[in-house]
Image (cartoon, rainbow over all chains, first blue to last red; front, side):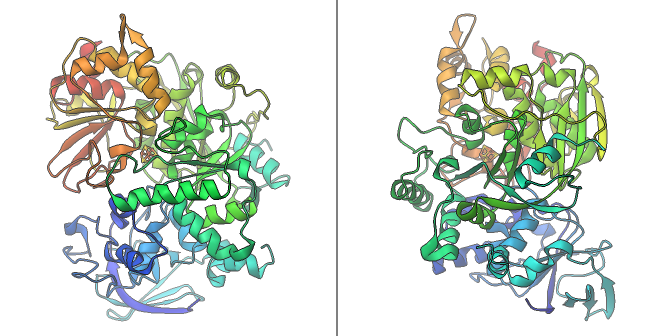
Length: 185
Length: 431
Ligand code: SF4
């Protein structure tokens, strides 16, 4: 696990559901064939209505053209991020697109578990609403151990909630690594 | 301190006593369910992670229903079903329900009930968020992703946090213009789409006790729309007679103690609830049908694990009998059993199927179909500019197809009334 995560912010609103993260029609691609796996990155966040894509102004595509990786590696969002279906393709597609962490006010349970157990990215809860304070493109730095977020562009600091009981799974890089470490499997 | 049903099932399957909400425990899984969208990646994670040692923990406890992308020419979607078929063949799985055979069932959540996998007092985990549906039978059921499912496939275990429970009590006699769908949309409006995150939702009250199992499943089905971990209804005579009709007699029954501690208790008098819709683009965007009456529609849709059960079609047929629909109206029986029931059950001597045909509805084969949009050739899929009223469960942007369509969620009565007029209509106008 990286203890310091640096990257550009991509800012979204509340209730970003799994159909916005990866629309259902794309779920047909194989996750074990590299060329098809890339498609999940290519279509990541393609279901977000364009006027709400990349706040505050919107109209910023998460993925440019034919790319499968985004220039943004940290997502800032409001409440209930990842609500909707149980598809693990949601955190997976963000991972393929290069997202390392999400900072949201709250998460839907299944998305949260999937992010942690699959070791795809780190879902962090903010203490206050941040998606009205950070702008898409801001340079951010997250300190996972000290639960701190620095907005380098604006020179502002925010406190984050600790990962709590899932820290060990996150640190191990997912459920299977955690289970092997603890001799469960 | 008393305990809720959900806590009691957690104690049983974790072999621990006196659990407190928030605590993480490992549960023994009684049934693992998967389908064509999440099954193949689950299998591939299981193979990668367990390697040569990969062994299914208990074949009898693994249930696989292809149901999501079935009647499509999409080659990738069909490949997913091929992977399931091969896997089932290779491991001689007893509970695989293949497409194109007599065994094909349709939508997993209804199929679990019909095939007798919803056993009270057990833990049922599925790779589908609406797995909470099974809780109508007094069991703990919840949805997970592929990694968790792969872990279960190899070990039979899952970690879960003991949830707090929210109780919802509906009292009174349900009026003929309301269905369980109206009640759950009301709850969603009150607690919003994240109001039950990480919590159990327990339903009770005289109105619930009068409901048959299918209507109860509509309530537990949409617990996930409030972010709920599970929905649950305790066992009573209605549950027992459903189970005995399919040959299930042996199970553990748990009840919440009178002094159980709840996170919250909401009480409703059902006679005060009105026919309800969720407006675009969120299941908690409630309004009463009267307020949006007259909204022009381009499509109506009756289907899915929420609104494609036999009872949903009984409601719809009551209004569609002798009427014609004014906009394309899709009838998608959730399971093949429901499709058969449409031919057998009748109203005024005419089969439900004929009633729908005579009304001009398009009857599709059993699957998830346009509930989740699906590949481009999916029947009933929404297109740009569509305004749809549907008995399904989600209306986030693009859920039923195009991001540029709008979806209203409603009861089968409201959808049928609206289909007849071509605009959103209160079912009381036809009752
Ligand atoms: S019918 Fe819809 S909600 Fe139900 S399992 Fe299928 S896609 Fe999911």
